[in-house]
Image (cartoon, rainbow, N blue to C red; front, side, top):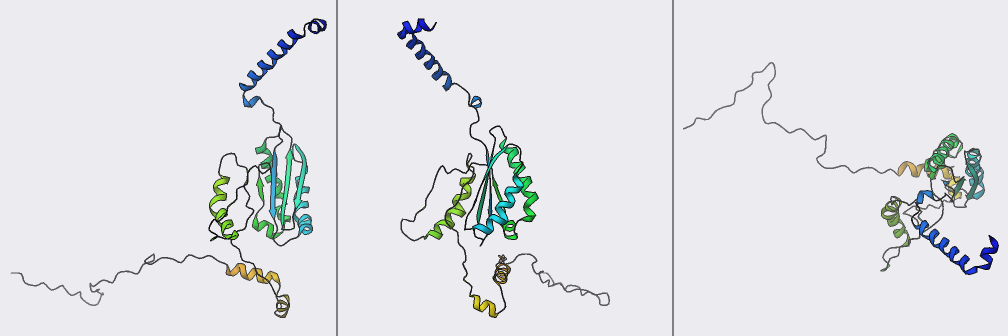
Length: 249
């Protein structure tokens, strides 16, 4: 059989081209469900520890979560990143045959078991769990053409009006903001704090206590004052006067 095709190379080329053409036509009609799942599903856990550097963040948050995630069904490997800004990211990669929904639920259950061991600031801010691959596919930038809006103004506008609608788009796993919103930065004089026998935690607690958003109310709202009636009231001891009637013509 091999000698037959070696002696007739043109015939062999024709058959090879016909096989390639048939394969190209078959690929166009092949359902997507028949393609194998190549990209392994990933679950990203993000925690924020305000004011912590990279080493305390790794010891108190990243390592604690990593140790609890060991032993998950279908877990291949774990990648973590502890930044000096207080942001910790743990990426869990599972086998391609693993259901992403089941992996997401398992990560949530393991995180609930270790949540009590995390710092209070991390628990108050909340730990985010995203069922998505942490790969950036698109970057959107905002700029002020007339220069009336600063970087902070643009960041606050993006967080309030653009970020959430993008997250609701079908197919978008996660959307991050690289700018900053309106915030208050406070510098402390440690000498004066020591003189007043105060700590930075006392200052932060006082700011949280006074930083309360209250509604202004409304005019004429409930409970409203009762209307004053001109009809005289009658008591049990005094007789009620009868209303006087004017003669009619």
